[in-house]
Every structure is written in structure tokens, then in C-alpha cells.
Image (cartoon, rainbow, N blue to C red; front, top):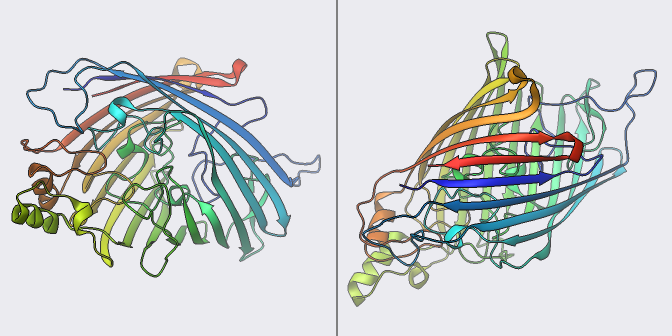
Length: 435
């Protein structure tokens, strides 16, 4: 049994919005939106620039473990606390009617427990893209967003992270091109999607079985198309995959390696309260290995199976995810996710989960007179396919897990967090516990 504790601090300097939905999220029909600045006549005052900054530090530790067996990729029985941090600058510039350029330089450093290995649903969402523990500056996002209004009705966007203040068409078509994160546009959830302000577990910030296209930092290059109306939204993306599994370099040979993602979002009202359901599907094509072929080669040569030895071009991984959220009161909401992939080919980008289901609840602190505080609790169950189990049991390794001949079962995760807002210091502190 693992009991992990975390202390998370996020700094947002004066004038910087503290996100209630995932910070990198592109504008979409999401349930939480705030009014923007207006003129004295009540008309929207659009802005041509947006500038924000965030810094997140996570210090994490776990109790001493007693395990009868450990492999190279097992969680260490005993280790010191590990610290990770990220700092991001969010710059937006309006170019012409409907067009905005977003630029996000980012610095990341530190490390996760046991080198971010040993648990598929890892408890720190800020470490899975950090390879070198020393601070590194890199380009997170640089993309153009062009919006085409499909009607005269508008809503109002506030100035926020990667979002300019001003009117937004209620019905529109948008094109996003450049370096971005597909998780900014897909699998959104108001209560469980941002490890900087909400749950930190990998299988809570995104659907665990969605092997979404990204390099080791979580970003890719490609395009996202959006058709958004007040009642539903349809998003389609085609993006690059890493050259190798969990590789920092993207493969620009698009004809042989690419990822497609599609998602339909539907909003509804239940008992007068808003809810949202999202159905996601994905297809990845790359020079992957099948777990079965790696095991067969290992048996033939008398060695441990190795996916790198049997990678072949043209292999395809497919999967789906269902994501729902429902407001219960003005301060409390619930959410759930279910996801699945075929589990025949090796994990290529996210984490080694082939099936996942989660359920959780989140609340503001209004009832105890702390309206800016947040409280959340959730449980997750993760699994791997029969072929994946056979590969690990024969001595194979992925890039996150690999413990050898164990009795494989379901990975069960529980997380509770409380985000204590410190508005005077433009910061928040979030102690959390994982089980």
C-alpha cells in the first residue's frame, strides 16, 4: 500500500488570472466563464494583448514500503521527498479580425518519485514530461487561432490564460495551427483536468487510456478544427507523434506517423443544473511494436522481450473515452471518466494504462466562508490488457512500468486535495494525499 503526500504551491502575480478550468484551454463552450471588462455603456472592451504568468512547485513524498519483490522500474521502497516545478509565460496577441497568436515559453525542472516510474497512474502530473532534473527553458506553445463567426450573437470572454478579453461568437468555426497540446482542446473537465490547481494524478488530469499525441513535455505540432454552438461542439485534430515511445523529438514524417483525435461535446440541463458529456475517439499510427511479437521473439531467443527489437511501421493504436460532469449546486459538482484502448501495441506517448475509470466530486469553500478555496476527492481504477500483462510478466519494460513476474491486477488510486487560496499573495497552497 502506498500513501503519498504532496504539498503544492502556485503563484500567479498581480493581474494574472487564477484558473478554475485548465489553464492552457483554448476558448470553447465550457460551463465556467467570467465576464470581461466593459465600457461605461456596457459594450465589451476588447483587448489586443494578453499577458499572464504561473509558477507551480510540488513537493512529494511517500511512506516506506515493504515489498517482497522489486524490479528496475518499481517504486522505490524508501526515498527522499522529490520537488518539481514549472514556470510558464502566457502571451496572446490579436493580429486581425478573428485571429490571435499564442506564445508560451516554459521552464521546468525537478523530478518525480522514483524517476516518475513504478505507477501507471502517477501521482504528480507536473513530472511526467520532465526528463532532466535541472531547469530547462523550452517552447511549450506557439500557435495561430483563427475564428470565423457563424452568426451575430456573441458571449463575452475575460482576459485569461491563452484567452483575450472581448466578444466571442456563440456559434463559430475555429482553426488552430502550430505547436500546441491536444489536451488543451480535448477531454476537458471543469473539475478534473489541471494538475496545477486540481487533482494531480495522471489518470485524473486526462483519460488514462487516451495515449494522446505528445512529446515528453506534453506538446505536439499539428492542427485542431472546432465547430462550436451553444448546444454542442465538434473538434477534430491531426497531429504529430514522437519519433520513439516517450521521445522528446517529434516525427515530422507525417505519412508514416500521425495521430487523429475526434470529440463530440454535448451540454444539457438536469434539474435546472448544467451538465456536459464528451465522447472522444483516437487513432495513432507509428512504428510501434505489438506486445505479442516482443514476447514471441524473447521466447525464440531465450531473452527478455524488448519492444524496441520488433517495432514495425504502420502499426495502429485506437481507443475511446467518455467524460461527464454535472453541477449539483452552485458550489458542488461531480465528474466521471471511462477510457479504453486496444492494448495490443506498446504505449507511445502518455502512460501505460489500457483501461481506466474514475469518479470524483469537487466543491468550493463557500459553505465555510472560503469561496476561493477548493476541495476535491476522487477514485480511479486502471488496468492493462492481457497482452500487456504477458509482456511485463516475461520481463519486458515499458517507459514507466515493468516489475517482472507479479500477480497483476487493477491499479487503484484515491486522491484528496484542498486548495487554500491566498489572494493577498496571489498564490494558493494545496496539500493532497494519494492512496
